Length: 72
Image: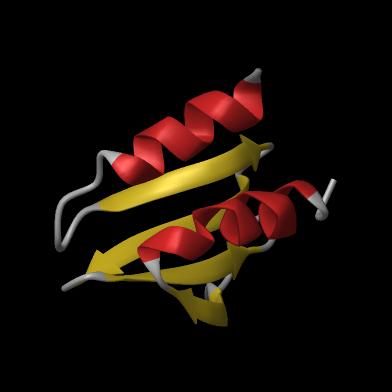
């Protein structure tokens, strides 16, 4: 259920917006929409500099969700 909600939130994003996916204990996935692309960063627990993971098209949003939930 949580994956579906995260997917819906990504689908509703507008350019320049940022959303967090599978956020727990101050870590998880940070997704930024740049034009029509989605850029995924991994934010490690206890902060630090977000690490670039990849850039995705709208039809690949399920890959973002799967990647973020694999960090559990």
